[in-house]
Length: 283
Image: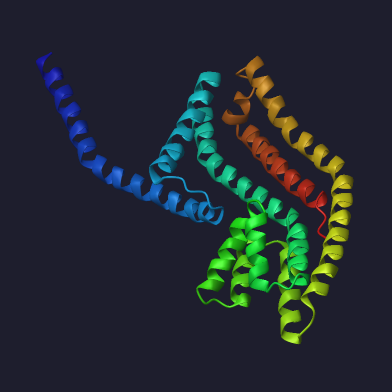
């Protein structure tokens, strides 16, 4: 009995000693990994003019996977579902930031017509292009005033108009903005009338937006059908699992079942990709 207790104490002490030795290494690896994730997120936040403290970002990056993993464990009591939910929690913050960036770009693109109208009116009133941009910064809401305010500060620091507008085009990556910047540069180099150029651009962008809205309305049905067909197998599998937890055991235990499960997952992914491709029309 004493020998068994001594062996258990030795084993426990060895495990504790090894864990104590490996913990600093593990902590360094986790810190580097988390810092790398934060460094990949902060440039996007800076482009959106969002000032979030570093400690708050790290807290969100830690709490979201833990929360998703906890919800998955409470709902299913399955370790693999818990790990999968925690993995989804790692993706959620990045997905939200990307979504916010897309929404900001779309809002910026929708404000470009008003920007052109203000610039055209200011130029007709006798103001210079720099003064017209100042009016845009004062009159327009975010994100236009933020982006053109940055353009204005760059020009005041000595950056050329072409360089500042090229930086704006690189940050926002909007098709309408590409047309505007290209037309401005051509008009300035060839000595064209910017007022007339802006007036024509307003009509061009408005007609293009009407065409895009019409095409998107025609594609809504296809996108909705694709979303339903993509989510239907997942919800069906969850329903069957809740009804009979052992129904899918054959897919994990039998070799043929594993092959069928792999085929189903690959087919689902390919189906989602094909439906998204077929439902998207580039103009």
